[in-house]
Image 1 (tube, helix red, strand yellow):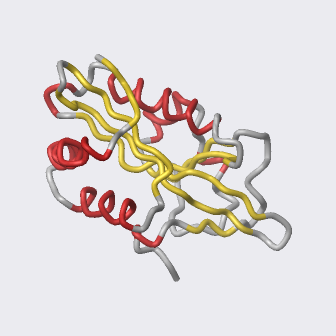
Image 2 (tube, rainbow, N blue to C red):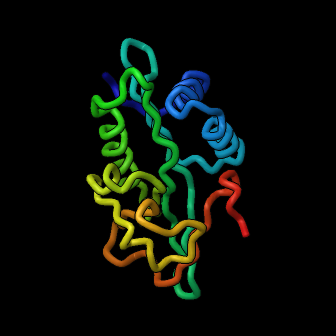
Image 3 (cartoon, helix red, strand yellow):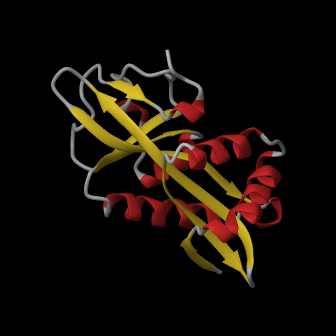
Length: 167
């Protein structure tokens, strides 16, 4: 298996992977709109024998407060073809995606809405987001900070428009 940056030529296969992983088109529509809005930071694909079997996407997100404005990434979606799930492909995509985000100079962290048991293995924690003004709350809304305490107290989380979460 090879993991590499997503390219435009991958788009149709990526959308099929996302559809098959989630069993619906909603996440595909989100990904298409993020690309149309130019809000995608990058995507990674897992490829085996020329076939894309996994995908992860990171898009632009902001956290603002009166004293601080930081750029973060939203991790969504993470998709692996059903026949390949449970083999560590998703974990490898997350690990490499986190490292790629750390390499982007202006990013201060990553936000994800997902299974706490899964994402906590990579350092994501809801304790890092519970003080934020965000459309989500609870254990599934997690953050990963690249610098300790960088997410500002009562900072407002602003997702890309494609998520449809604007107030």
